Length: 311
Image (tube, rainbow, N blue to C red; front, side, top):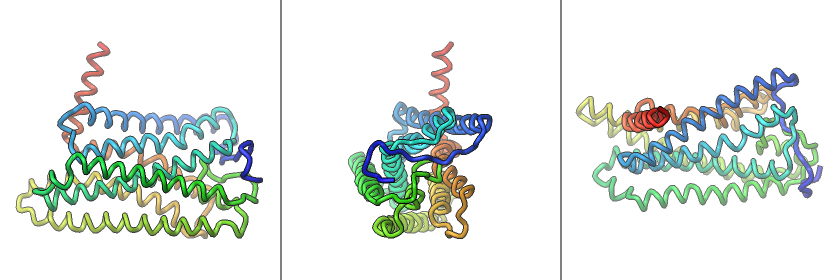
């Protein structure tokens, strides 16, 4: 198959061969997708409408929810549509768009989680300088840098991936256009350039991970020095949701991309892809709202307003 023609298409992995199981797959994905849409939309609405939440932490959380909405919308609707229509096809340019959006949103989310670690570090370790170091202009600049830099990164990464000749057919063994599965379709001597880009990406990702780890080491050292138990509890409540999201996001992505080739199998690859592409956007709003009284209060007011408007 040549990748020079926009008329070509790829065949994605089917979850099932029978209509009943395809309908079950559609229903499960729809439930997860609607949960992610509802949770992130409520979070965005609560932060936008409640002036008490117009702080750096919630500004970054709003950006995270926007990325989560785009992240899960990149892959899940197409997979559901294929199951409902009993097809596996995705157009060449549809696959290109899916790869670009997936890389862009995933890397931007990771960058934003790194920025949020810095926000927590300043809030706990340098509280007197918080308003100076993280004023509104600085927050906008950091968020814009996370979006813009990863937009360019995804553009280069996608262009590099699809410039490689594909000689091994057009069957992608995943429910969306995933770069590692696309590279398996390349000619044996053509994927080294993209492999080099992946190595550089891994180094950058490790740098962000190291920054997050160092930030939290400093945070926990500062928290343990707080004399009052109530103060320590409040500090931990500020940090634990973000730490839980980072741990879940990084662990699922690492399991998918860093597992040994000997452990690779279609079932395992599919399971890990579902975990790292669908669960983080779905559970992130839940993790942040469980221990956050201000956000829960804002959500409660929104739900009360909706209930009152429907009466």
